[in-house]
Length: 563
Image (tube, rainbow, N blue to C red; front, side, top):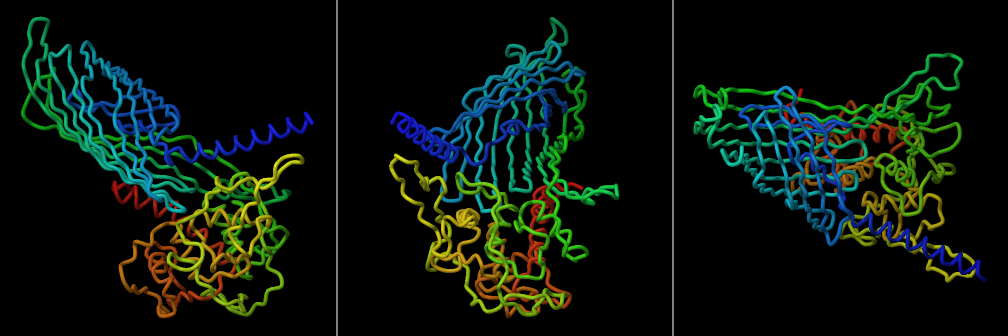
């Protein structure tokens, strides 16, 4: 009896522990801001750097920064940032401590973070001169749009600092304003900021202990800052002949932050204007982290050696996106909805429902009729027939509406121990898949993320094959880029444009615009053809490449004109 009671207490403590953990995680802001960027600096593994403009010329300061952020309470978080910086050559030392309060307002997928300053303290010594921050006004707001595969962000800020020099002998006012855009997803993140600023000096300059001369001067500057985290795969060949595998893929992660500045500065000598001309100065600084490396598992698949999609298949297998067991991949067979859901969870790093993790096999491919239908440029690849076409479930259609997921944290535990009260069983999301199905967690994950919404009212259709049009709808929906298509009827450049289903036309247009698809050598898309397993591997790797390369180029190289 005592043992049962103790077991019951432990069980309920575990249950509430899991519940509170899920609640607190959901209560935290979706993106923890890096507040050191609010001062126009960049950060490496240990080093921090920013440019100081108070002396009338740009001076690079280096040192350390520490950040702490408390838990969210009533939609607010409090963060403290402490800087210790110096430039030994110029005899400059800086000590700074700021506290920020961020208010978080959520509306569906969108989130607005508004940050204001709570406390500030900053002192700078330059030789014998002392600069004390007397007033600091700061306002920053960011909009985050949480799409299934990507979180997009855009923000603006303004700031004004007023410094007292040598106990009010002079005053310096620094004003800055700027704009930032960025994104983050499973394959990297980028944030690009462009900042404008002015410095105005007014007061007296000490020539010696008894001589003081009044003067004024000003300067202006521009800063480009880029934060980029990349995740990419590299093939590593093994040189020995007598080895069980010739090579495999290694996952690399790396962070790079870049600061570039330019501006017009006064011609000063001992703090006084030597002439009326402006001095144009510019420079840059970069910090890179040490790349992290992780070997992926190696595929032993006898039927892909020399196949035109071998590299793509091996990469996805290493990522865990292809959960099949055995020695054969069967690249010419159809790729089913359940298998595609499993692949998306791995490719997009979608969170599995609470309490579920790891790999589970998906429905097999045996016993399904096939015929000879192929990918453009490939002949004789079998495809799936005999299944009626079912449109994806979109807003306004019957069944579970898109955009109203059931969060995993809301699902009760579904088991109980002897002698304990029974808990209600979890109600399945789909009538054709039970909650005890090993692959159910993957279907639930893509459904709750809003990536795949089912084939009809209450149906997921895990054993139904996918057409190319359906896959493009899923991928464009995951990116949240449907809005790139113009309003009304849109035409695509494909020769079989007329064959594109109306519900997929926008997605096909966007997929072509961003480079996910191009068509065959004759300009045909064949949108209603069944996607084979090899084709799915190629398309998913192309999707990964878009996240890694094209999206980075759009947010970084194009905005900042980086080479």
